[in-house]
Length: 478
Ligand code: NAD
Image 1 (cartoon, helix red, strand yellow):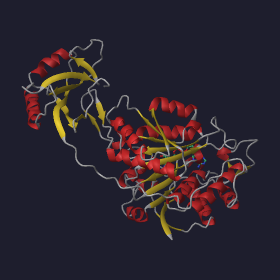
Image 2: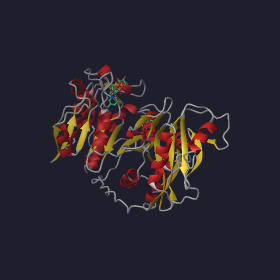
Image 3: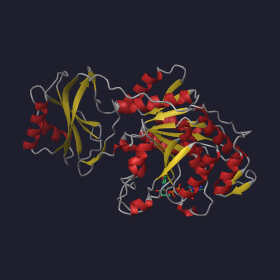
Image 4: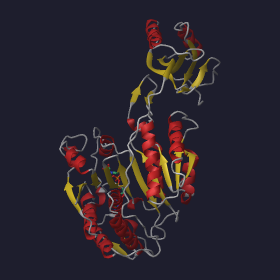
């Protein structure tokens, strides 16, 4: 019998978890549970992660975790439990199905059945931030080949397994040609391995606008972390059923399933919360562990219950709904509908063996890289870039020349415009004229020289080519 970890969480968590477990039980799912305590009580006991050390063993041993929402106490110092969980367990894929329940739940988009697959581990969420000058703070956007390959492959495998027809990719690679460029490139590479599935790429801004306007045109969408964070909320919201949605966080070995809403302390203990989000998360979990038959049984019973107008107060609507159900009545209605299918809403059809194995990432042979120069970032509170250039020109070496100075990416030397607004953070590029390789010692010499000349260098970035391909932007959005 499969053993999974559960946490009943805070607020409405215990009520919706009990309702969910009752439904799983009635559906005859062969599961055993290890219950752990995480969340508010743990935070308030002085543990800033909200997860006691000893429960990690249970989570890692069982590998599958069904989690009710938790309350993060007010005030600072508490780390996001979900972020800790995702990063520590390598849960690289966030999966959020967004489906309209028209006409039973009000929505402006009656035909919508889209799955957002968001990269979960990297991008700006690496959380590497530094203040470098009085005026400028930096957040590092890290995009890796393994990160891209894993999430894009997951999106195509998901589409294949669930009979989806198209995978769309959203990036901003017209501006971020290196980072988002890699995501898009990997998307094209992986898409070629799935000729039976249609693929397309949208620049995120127009893609997002189209998603908000005509979501019925999208099927599966895969995105880097930040875009996925924003768009998965928008997509869930426009179905009109944000309170009904579940989500999955999937890793190579572990996976976590939860509702997308929070712990709703305002209605806790009143037996009025809607358990649908956690039930839908549990359905995703059943598919993940290869219990597709049970997932199908429960999801169709749930759709039928929604269609019957048995609605908790959050989705109750005069003229559409028939009964205001409590949390437990709603769960009982689903149980009564086990084995039945909805008539108007499209029933789901899952394969018995819906789970799929992701291939392990294979690292490629290390590329030949050549060092061409260095970007040094200076903290300088002057205003005329010509003055800064005069000082920097003293640092030039025979083989390494000052190529340009930019301010927030805009070239201000040579031939800058006086209209350009400048901060106290200057990117100064020293490089060999014809991209002939230089040595690290040349960079060290430039840094030593700048220190001697009182130029405050706050950061450096080496300029490399990999297998002869330039691995850095040329500046000014190039
Ligand atoms: P929330 O989602 O808990 O509540 C927002 C509103 O939606 C409230 O009016 C609530 O009553 C209602 N609502 C939410 N879920 C419902 C349900 N199942 N049935 C009926 N109504 C429901 O968001 P919030 O108020 O911003 O956050 C409350 C707490 O939840 C905070 O401590 C927050 O940190 C936490 N939170 C946890 C998670 C998680 O564990 N994954 C996610 C989001 C928020």
